[in-house]
Length: 609
Image (cartoon, rainbow, N blue to C red; front, side, top):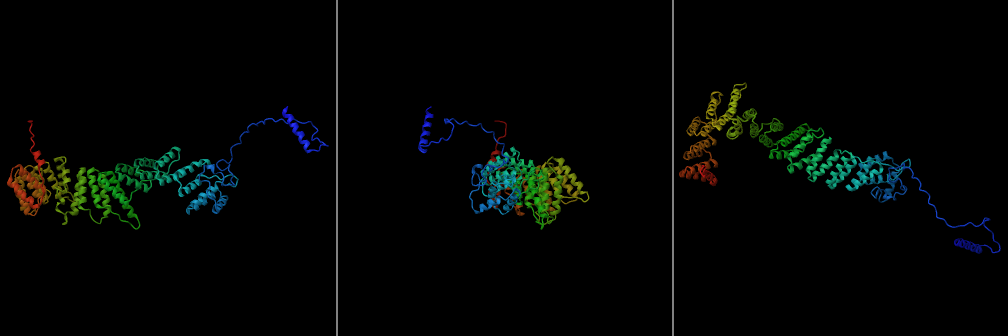
């Protein structure tokens, strides 16, 4: 009631002040209504509208006429243009005239001219413009990838690119393999190998299958950081997926494995690459192939050495097919080392590969060196393939048998052909008999094969198993059955057979016989005579042979003088020891002590303790 009286008093005061007091005119004929205030009632909440038909663009709710507003729509990232000048105004006006297809065409031209800044700015203006139907422009994944590439070329970090890739969901587009590859390139430039590996794993989990570029980027980055085991994991995944390994990454992987000594891993990867059509043509450089072969041979890794020779053969064939042809040749010393490795590792495939590469390198311009033939003989002898070993000996004799420039020791069973002798007597007399029978049959074949060097190996093989009878019969068969003349090596082998059974007088008679025939003795002849006298405990006779050897123009070896000195010491022959010391001073040898040998010699091996 007090509020009503206050309102009436204020109304009457207003009327008295504004209207004439003599004439009062009422506004309304109705009685005065109460103006007591009431609380406003809140209307019920309206139902929401249907989804925005133009969803897919984060700028749909933004005032598109004012591009400088709304930078928070994408979290403040680079889709909002920074800096607005006359060039930006032109690009902004240009962006409003383009549709998706024409924008892709413009991007293609600008990428060729590397206008990355303009491309980036055009995309940012275009994405904020409306199309012909009045809706915001929506990019597809290919167009957005061009924008990612522009950011990458302008130096954006991997984190910034990942943020841009995450924003693709706001346009209802999913990143594809090319999108992630751009991020991987940024990680490669920043050497973020752990992040790159995690991103590749994420691609596999999300179903976005990596391609050749994805795997090559990650593998190359891991190799740069010496993460060879991790690189092997993704390399194996690459091969299983049927992707293609780039030649640069393959070369880098080979170098990393060789430098770290992971030869088994390298051989495994090369073998896997050969099984796939996409990667079987991969090959390291010519220089790197030679280096791989050298390292593999030093480590006796026959499989890797074979792969290295295979790569070299591929380079040779490629050079011959070039126009103009490029003639590449493998060093013959490398081939000889490969043959020696094949002999040590018992690998027949490496022998064939080595010889094939050598023949391809020589191109029938000259014959292989004698050392290469000897290496091949050694390899086949180690394998026990005597037929191929004697066949190689036949080639050696055919090539260098009548050459005057070749050392006479080339066909010596004591030095050059010693591996073949060892192979002949490996199983005792059975192998020696079979070899002799085959040689005798080959001497009667058409054309006949007669070889004194081959028969000398049989004679010395019989001597090595202390079978004097077989050695003597084989020696006689050289002239009687085969029809050849024994040489100095034949007589030396017979002397060795007599000396091993301590028939020193017979060995001396063999020496007198060969001298009477005009056969010139060599160093091995005198060495065998000295050994025969020492086996008979006669150091004086051994010294006489050494004197005769010196008079003939030969120099006794240090090992020979040591054996004579040892025998003089054990026989307590002081006079012979003094004569020997004069010879030692004559040739300037430093003999050294015999304390360790004398200690073993004086040990009491009896059973009485």
